[in-house]
Amino acid sequence: MYEDFSESSGDHYFLCDTEGPWGIVLECLAIIGIVVTIILLLAFLFFMRKVQDCCRWNVLPTQVLFLLGVLGLFSLAFAFIFQFNQQTAAVRYFFFGVLFALCFSCLLAHASNLVKLVRGGVSFSWTTILCIAIGCSLLQTIIAIEYVTLITTRCMMFVQMAPCQLNVDFVVLLVYVLLLMAITFFVSKATFCGPCENWKQHGKFIFVTMLISIIIWVVWISMLMRGNPQLQRQPQWDDPVVCIALVTNAWVFLLLYIIPELCILYRSCKQDCSLQGNACSAPVYQCSFRAENQELSRARDSDGAQEDVALTAYSATDC
Image (cartoon, rainbow, N blue to C red; front, side, top):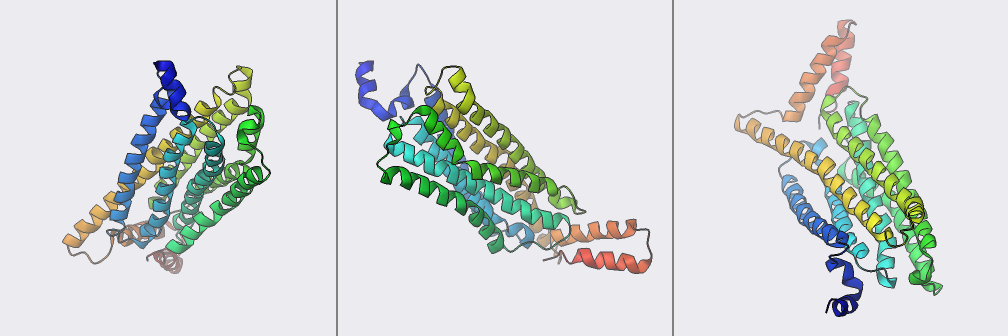
């Protein structure tokens, strides 16, 4: 009976393989990730109506786009759990790089905005941040479309290619994503330099997220290109390695970036509501900036005129 089931299940065999249960485990993690991502997405949409600080609100549309990318990553895991065929191969080669490029581009756009904020500058508009994220991910989309189109129009079949050639093509397609990861990592590191401490914690979330993501990518690419062939586990371990990295990285996005950002957003909205209840006319971010600016101005050892100039320069950060 089991043999009949495995033959009839075909492409869906790994979804219920009890001897090698990696497919079942990743399937459960992916489903849980989809549910959690949808809940977080609804939470961000709710807070978009509550946030009064325009510097915080401007990045929310990009974070919603980021969550849509994470939702796509969890859904893409099923393309690696299903058996490799002509249909799942096209989905893998196209969406893997595009979705990761979208997520890293959103982090890059957020980090670029933080570089201005930590130095006392004015935030980009929400349309600018969103355009940076979409624009940076557009090149990977073009590369993936060209590759998949080239394979299909030349009557080449993914299933007829050697496993080593498939892996080389898969990694080469992700060169631009690797470049985005490196740029985002260094830009997030630049958010540590500046007088405005309130914004540095956001940069820390992006920095840690990128650091863990880079480690994950180094491990899975090393296993795919060198580890599996040396262990004589190619192609048996190819799909599990990539799928584990995919699901793990998606959970890293949620646990190290989205959930901390949501906690800060909740505290900010709670403070705004308490200030409104006390009939406070100035928003909380203005109060925090003014207190910070006064400390900076008092710390200067120059004359009173220079103190007034410094105070005026930093008060320009109010929206």
